[in-house]
Length: 170
Image 1 (cartoon, rainbow, N blue to C red):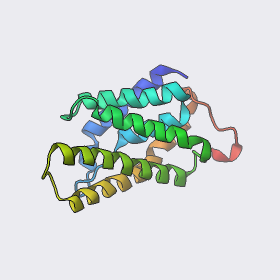
Image 2 (tube, rainbow, N blue to C red):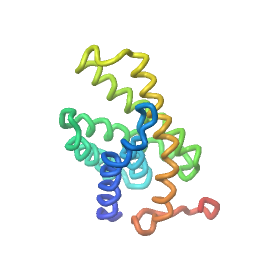
Image 3 (cartoon, rainbow, N blue to C red):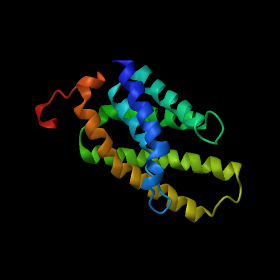
């Protein structure tokens, strides 16, 4: 494992999340590029670095948000831990796996963030609107996951992660 590619890809995800993703919003729902990259690293790195990367990306994302420091660190740490625990039971290079797992983790992380917003800012929005936004953002994130996973998997040698051991996955 090499740390430089992890840092570069993570930084690119954070930059994309803050600059490009707002332009891609549909009805207020935005894909969470950072979450997709956290899931990718959790699937392809060994245990301590996999969750450490989630925590580090969360700290960096928290520095760029108006929310309290540590909120995104906890959320992305939990997402990395969940993705890491699931990886032994899944075929990681399959499109359906990437979409479904990303959708489930995106719903859980968005629900966690929405619960914080509802607690911190009572009356911030009606629960049906918030629920609709959570599911719309999770679906959008899940549909964008293969578009991010595929190029990263193609560059696995450059990124320093192990390639597939089965020939039909390329």
